[in-house]
Structure formats: C-alpha cells, structure tokens
Amino acid sequence: MSDLRERYQAAFMPNYGVPPLALVRGEGCRVWDADGRAYLDLIAGIAVSSLGHGHPALVEAVSAQVATLAHTSNLFVNEPAVLLAERLLDLLGGDGRVFLSNSGTEANECALKLAIKHGRANGRSVFVATENGFHGRSMGALALTGKASIREPFGPHALDVRFVPYGDVAALKAAVDEDCAALFLEPAQGEGGVVPPPDGYLAAAREICDATGALLVSDEIQSAIGRTGAWFAFEHDLAGARPDILTLAKGLGGGLPIGACVAFGPHGGIFAKGDHGSTFGGNPVAAAAALAVLTTIERDGLLGNAAATGEVLAAGIAAVEHPLLAGVRGRGLWRAAVLTGPHAPAAEAAARAAGFLVNAVQPDALRLAPPLTLTAGQARSFTDALPAILDATEVAA
Ligand SMILES: *Cc1c(COP(=O)(O)O)cnc(C)c1O
Picture 1 (spheres, rainbow, N blue to C red):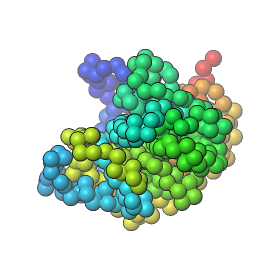
Picture 2: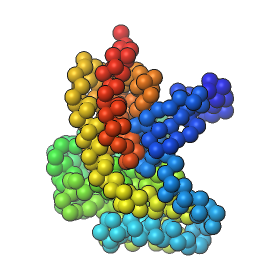
Picture 3: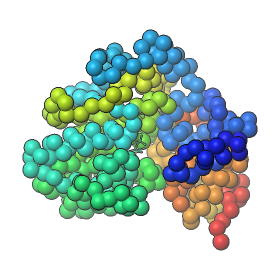
Picture 4: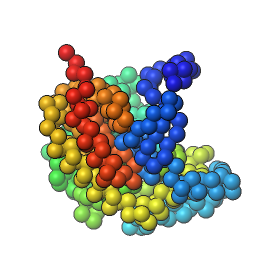
C-alpha cells in the first residue's frame, strides 16, 4: 500500500495531498484496502455510493449497457438518458426539462447559464449565495462558492455575487432584490459541515424569490436521491412548492459519474438550440446506472431505511457522553458528529484505525454519509465504537 501511495504522489498533482488509504474492493457497506483490511464505509465516496459497493442491480445495469452501447454523444438520442429524464421529472411532479452532465459542478454551470440568460432578458445581473456554501470547483460554480480560501486564489471572478450568512432570513431579504438573477442555496450546507438551516429558512427563500422575481436554485448535489430520507431534501421544507432550478449529482449514479440540472415550468425553455452542451452528458452507461439507483431505492424502500437508520445513527451518537463530543446534526443518513474543538482530522484517523471510514469535513465536524443500504446493526457498530475512537483521538496541544 505504501508503494501505491508513493506512486500516487509521484504521478498526481498535489491538489489532494496523498490520501491515507488505497482501496481495492467493496461489497455492500464494506470496503477493503490494499493490505486486505476491511472497513465499514460511512462516507460512501462523499455521499455517492448510494447502493453501497457491488450492488447487483448496478452491476447488471452497467454491464448490460456497456455491452450494448456505451456512448452516443448528444448527436444521437439514447433510450437510457430519455428514461432517466422522464423518471426524474416524474419524481419531481412533472412540468420541467432536464440537462444531463457528468458531475455536480457541471450541473451548476448549467443552472448558472440558465440564470444568466434569464437575468439578461430581465435586466438582472446580481447573484446571491451563502457564506461557507459550496457549489463546485469550475470557474462559474467556484464564483458562487462561499469559502474565500478556495475562491479568492482564482479570482477575480466574472460574476457579481453577494454572499449572505446561511440561515439568516433578514440577510436574504436585504440581498435578494430586483437586480438579483438567482439565489443559489443548499438545503443544508454539505461541505460546510452538514449544517441544516433554521426551520422556515428555505420556505422564506422561496417567498423572497417569488416576491422579487429572482430564480431559486436549489443545489441538491449532495442532499438528494434519498440522502435525507426523501428523494429531494427540499421536500422536507418547501411544503409542496419547488425551487425554480434543481441540481443533482453525487448519489444519482451510485458511483458512475453523472449530474443533472432540472428547470421547472417556463425556465425549462430558457436555452435555445446551441446554448449549452456536453459530449459525455447523458452517456447511456451513466444513465443506466442512475436508473438502476432510482429503481432500487424505490423497490427496496431505501428512503425509509435512510430515515430510520439515520435516526439510529443520530440517537447512538447523541447517547455518547465524551469530552470531545458536542452533539450531532443533520437528517437521514447525512449527519455530522460535532466535536468540541478542531479534533476532526485526528478523530477521522482514529476511526479509520478502528475500521470505520468517516470524513473530517470541517475541523470540528465528522461527516457520515454512508450507503442508503446501511443497516441499523452497522450503524450501532459505529456508535458502540465511538467512545473508544474518541478516547484514541489525539488532541492537539
Ligand atoms: C460535491 C458538490 C458539488 C460539486 O460536485 P462535483 O461533482 O465535485 O463537481 C456542488 N455542490 C454541492 C452542494 C456539492 O456537495
């Protein structure tokens, strides 16, 4: 394994550092490293492997499609992509149009181009996004990302963005006005540390956008496809309403790279022919994978499992009394164990040594985003081990 890590370091750009483990195999919620050690995967490749590893439905769908037709480009129609777009629209209540991309950041670039075009037609050029929000690494999505340390080294950006504190309705009211083309909002901040907004915040955002004519773009790249126990996280908060534009990626493909931008009502018709495109977007193998994910979530009741097992996980963490543990937040199988100080990197390492993969998403927050197939017993195996993991966490002096 040290050999693989050394070769990684020599061959790759240093932007990720050198990851601590090389993984070679997965089965269900378990993965194995290059030395043959097994881990319970509680991060699922950053909320991506929604069916776990090696799920037969995914293996079958991808294998059959790659053997039949692996790629068409958007010069030709392929049926899996059409079925996927139809299925997404069904889940979302219809009356929308879909663009398929290969990643989250590209789904947001599509949303951004829609909003720019909508704004130009209506004399609006300002964007509003949130401090500590995350929308991706490509230059448009990065301009909307509210973390100065990753945005500013690549500025100035060609987008006029007002950043507001997340969860603050008064700040939203002040920032979203008649000049605003769109508000980009996560239903809970994922990279920010799985931080849910106060009750009523998303509904207030919907009202403010309705009152001013700004588009509400819900970035559900991390939160959707069952992660919170609902297909889409906005369903918890918007009481039957929808955003104007929705972006998806991560869990949608179950491990295959795919993203989607869905625009509702008249916004589905903003692009004219030639306004946007992608060679790989709508690739039939990725679309077949996403269809298998959606079908399996429905067939196996995984929304219910995410809600119920998420409660077991949260209750188990909440029951641990330890000087390093402050509490737990999040919804469904999308949680953060909140620590009393900047101990998350050390706690992540201690968890790994104990056979659990978690993610130090913030200095004081451990993110848990396991496969939606996680069992209550697996959740308990982690919360039972948590006191010892925290005991083994080396507290920085
Ligand atoms: C991960 C993520 C993105 C970026 O997705 P990539 O596939 O890494 O480009 C954008 N927005 C949110 C909320 C995310 O969690």
